[in-house]
Image (cartoon, rainbow, N blue to C red; front, side):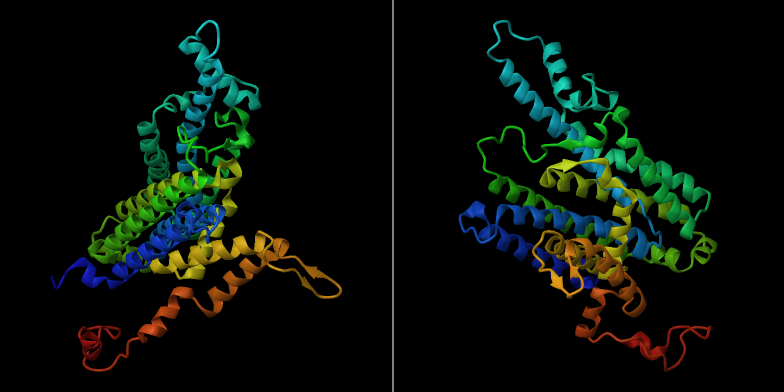
Length: 410
């Protein structure tokens, strides 16, 4: 019992408790329950925020704990959204086409139905044929599996090539950004099979739920997002709490020393990279049905840079810090860019926050990096009374920087 995972990590229990209370509070105050204190659109905003918190956890694992500054994780997020979006768009279009053909004098053949669905989906790019990547779009179980498989395989191939070549530091960051840019440019093409710049739309219309109000559907997705965030936080906490967590921290701090100790550095890095890509895919699959649309701009490199900024502001190397940073920036961004923040007249110029929000975000990142490297999460250290260890007492090792006797007792 002494070595229980929860007892060693009380922050996990606190986080899950706060998340559960938050989920219940939003549910009871939503329009779905009749209270109407929180609008359906804001419930969707909160649900999307929880998804962003989940990908922030993935980013914190790969950057804050393993030391890999990935500027491409939003590519995995977008791929997860595309995989589930394909089924949503196909199934919704199939229902519309089937209903419209139901009154035909001669019942349509299966091929005619498929051709009509293809014309509806791909007519905007001048085509009516289904590309090979849509082969399983009619199967929900397969598309759900692809939410994990596609981001995971891309991360596996990219990570294996990069890590076996021992590419590190800024060069690895540039490569991940290049991967994201290449994927984004490919998706912009009409012959990519994913409708080019038009993307996939109407994703908020779940097939077979015409009689169910959006207020209730938004709560369903909110619950699913909260559950995914809770499980993601639990998994990430378990991964970083044991020996595995110690090794990836060692890789972050001194990769060469860990390699000389006999650990397969490349294997550890590849595992974390692939696992976080799959987590990002799940987050994207829950995010875009709430957003209603996904297009190639969503996976542009700037989105991954924003993700790194969220984690830095929240406090990297702290899972709850990543969640706080993503939630804080997401909600504040919604407030500033949604026209709710009042303009500031300066006489000679009127500050419109819609135009200046990104400048404010960039300035916040610079200030946090310079003056508060622990981010918002570092404030909890003050509340808990955590201070830097005082190195005095007998040395417990041969080296000058070894653990001291009194420190070991604290």
